[in-house]
Image (cartoon, rainbow, N blue to C red):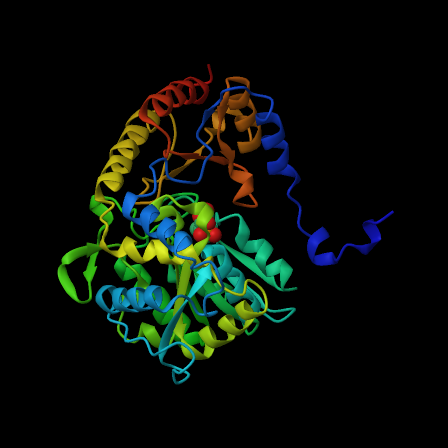
Length: 399
Ligand SMILES: Cc1ncc(COP(=O)(O)O)c(C=O)c1O
């Protein structure tokens, strides 16, 4: 009776496939859960303490829309060290000058970017496979996300993107390291992708929410201001990128506080100012005491956790690559694994077989128009991961 009131932008989004899997999973008491997209370590103590102190000392009101000045300063200092960007004070930069602002999660930054950039009928290019939100954010704007096939190595290269750019294209969205594959785009390919976007007059958006989770062989660049600091390659670190690249990063995955909803966006002031204006009338600001908490994060090294994830990644590849094809994850905490053709199963059917064995994985169809793979997360303790891998080995071998 009420259904006729629902807007097309909501009804155009179909979440039934993945919901079916979650409904099935809800029938299990204590499954081995390799579906979770968040770290399994606690938020570091200094960050928790600073957030609690902020609450106790009554920093519970709004912050400026662009963020707590103390956090913004930390972010812009870090962008200078990491990328060599000289950010102007938010709201006061010339159009091409880089600026930054704090967002309600990385999702908040992505949503505001899509809103600020896409008119109905416009197109943007996203990788296939993609982070689940990407196509839906375009739909919500009345625009279309064009998927760029990156199988089987999951590299969003300029050569793959170029044929998809046309006069409706507003931006290309890169995600490195990638969800769902963990694949990291090399420094050279990132530079080529940025050069392509620049030459075609489209924006490059780089979603780098997993930038701190990069494994030894993929740390293919160094911070602009510190050659001793190994970093995830980023097209935002190439000469002049501060004038034509929109960078989006987050705190939730890096410090284990996904529920705090904190991220940031940085790029040309002409775009950031529009995003920040839209934030003012939607999210208003990111959670104030939690912003005060992550001010501390810039002095905390997560290298122990990253090393642990690297060793779990090695375990996943060692155990599963005998049975199927896996593009080696260079970062994040996911692997995107092919269902062997010989099994004759879609990713969804394979995930259902896993559920029968009390194991949760996400079917590739949640991340792609094709349903030939499944995603596991190795952000779960070693024993459970190992049990899960035993089951996967059996299922992949057709047992
Ligand atoms: C690639 C990617 N971008 C953005 C997000 C959203 O992150 P947040 O929790 O900061 O909104 C996620 C979360 O899984 C992600 O994997």
